[in-house]
Image (cartoon, rainbow, N blue to C red; front, side, top):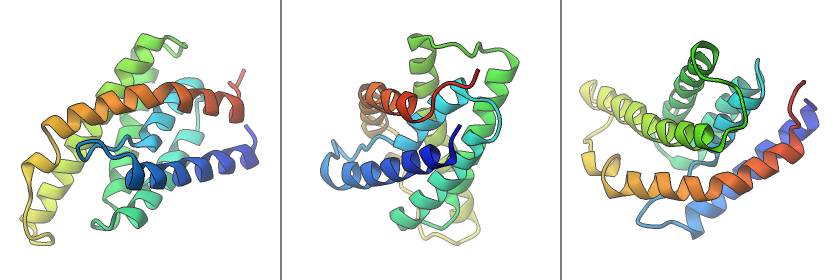
Length: 167
């Protein structure tokens, strides 16, 4: 995999994430393009690229979101390690659309759960004033999953063009 193509993918994801966050929010739900790319990359590439994507995406989301710095980074790294363990242990690494959609749904929900638990930890240690449960779960999560499923196909086409499968 070319480092140049990987950097181009990161730039495209970062720009698209900021455009979606400001322009195409639906009931407060915005698809996390870094989760989409992380699922695709975890299935198609073994090794370090998915760790780099999780770290770069987490840092970008932390800089952009204005939340406690490091939350998105830790959450994406935990998600990356869970995806790697699942794919190395019992899931096949094949281009099955149902497998990719299932991983995307579980990854999006898992991301929200880990993000909620991290925020709960921050509230416990009085680093954040309050925690709003409906901010993480409910209709917003359902719309975010549906939105992510719709956006997944164009993101996977972009990733296929920039990062061809490693043979």
